[in-house]
Image: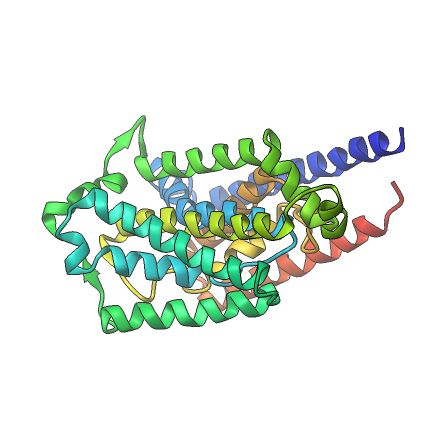
Length: 323
């Protein structure tokens, strides 16, 4: 009976946090309507918020799995940049948009596999392994592009159409984001893979004794994160019509921040995809409000830092509270 009571108690705080994030979004919307009544509530701006959230949102889904599994991935922004550069080279573009998209996904997944191998079989600390991948991927992207922005050729405008083509008023990139979020939710909550992710993040040794191949599962988690980076590279190529080594700058911090305020424990073993998506939307709306009100980027970073600090303090307080 005790495990059942704990499981039920674990859902309550999560639902409360989700309601809190929804309330925060509503409050931010009110602030936007008050401060920028002519710009914020327009359909164009709201669609722009969703399109902006799509790139970081897809990355955040992969980051959620990694952190629930007890790890962390600092390389997501750089891997996305590398995937976008590789997919927009002259050689890759000559094969058409389908191969470009496939290339981005393979490069992202491959980078995730390398990080996973270093962590699971090389026994490197996730922070160090993914930090090394962050530096290496960004450097390789700069080397391949010669630090130049690579434009998507007109004959490959099918990539751009993912951002310009709208269905029910929303660009296709938003539907890609929604599809990844739904798939992530199903994978985490309705499959053996998700249950094993919680087990590995909660207690790796107990998971091993229960018959879970912890090293292989850890490898798969980082491969999944890399896959999400590849999908995000397709989205950012569609939105900017370019591949660039500057894409994804500080995206790792945004993704980790969204995961944290969404309720996922940095120590692993607990978290939700829905909470992470709400966290992405909160940060995206904040960014939009700062831009509309003409505030500086430094102010945005300060605000995000304060929010992250508060979220971590609330997590620690929740862990100390009796259940």
